[in-house]
Image (cartoon, rainbow, N blue to C red; front, side, top):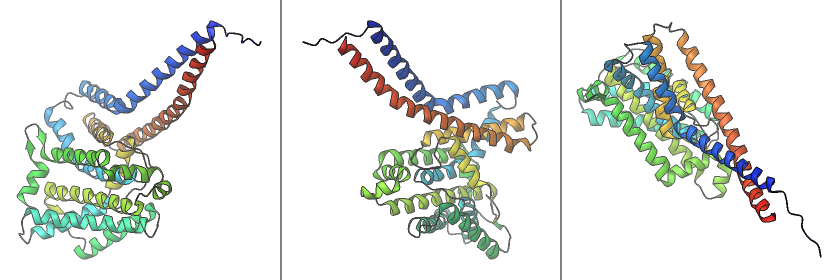
Length: 356
């Protein structure tokens, strides 16, 4: 009759603490992932408030919200496109086109509602064309949207003869420059866009499809997900938000400029990357995009308040982006390692207790 030799009690006491450490590490990783950007934002605000009294002036804080809301709205659309596995380099041209179209329509005195709807429709059409070329014709997103940006910008310059168009309405001007209590109206619009995207991505079937397509388009197709329609609609929404930001830009300036918004694409992508949206698709949270928008805006404003040369600002922004991407990659590796080790530690502890 064979007998099993019990393992030393020290094995039990060694495996249980290991499991506890791994689970504690996993919990810290979750907390950092969820609130890390907000902690960074709070630290930045406190540090800059101490370093520069003018930074903490309520008017300056209000100015930060107003100045960065347009980019935040563009980033809302970019988030959807990036999670679905693409991105759009034509959002700047789309925004400029919406501003010019809005200015032109407003001169016909058709009312604010019709002016906004026509401008938004133009953005949706540009987005749908991008989506069709990417999803159906299967042209690379970089090539498609870069070419679309050149085409739209060129046509805009030809049609307007490189001249700005004066226009706008009182309602648009209020939406872009007015206030509701301590908050700029444009920031309230940004917040509404954030909530709408959050609901779309987390509470609708389309949102689940967006994550699925971005994670693995081929597997999604085999599972019955309408991949092409999801991609096309994602780019249409990207064009919609870019056009919305363009209309608000018209409200701020009362001028439709064909050459405006040229830096929107890269800045919107930078916001999404800092916010943890994966360039490869399938990963991203709109709450973190809000934090990233405010972080980059606070950094830019803080450097101005500290009289730092504007030449340093792109360098600082670049460092922030690289740091965010690096930390994101490190956290993902840790999550993968923890995901493998925690079940192993649990099963090891269970086996050890059973043997003893």
